Image (cartoon, rainbow, N blue to C red):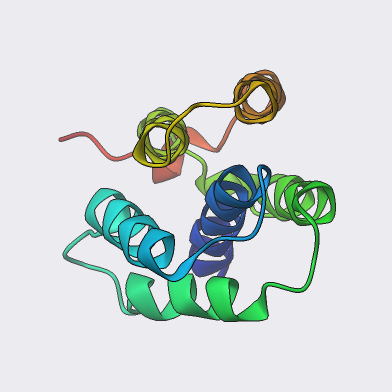
Length: 133
């Protein structure tokens, strides 16, 4: 995968950690998760299919939320040159939508989202890769 794909994969992993933190992701949640992440990360000029990445994440489902989160944050840091302010905002929007999609929003979900906000705030990409819509 390219660094750009790795970054999106890591965002999907964080989203999955949010969905999973309050227990196993059930089948009906899988579809909601897929729809939210695919809708938010779909961009016309991708040379990869976001939904394929999402189902790779879901089917992996062996790591706990904490391990998944730590791996994903590390991956985001490794590929941070591609992290634009727009992608940061999209990432947070995904996490919040996922938490709301599986009510109630638990203290653990609030905690992992707050932690992600703090962690991602410190990471700044190279302005060369910022997209202006």
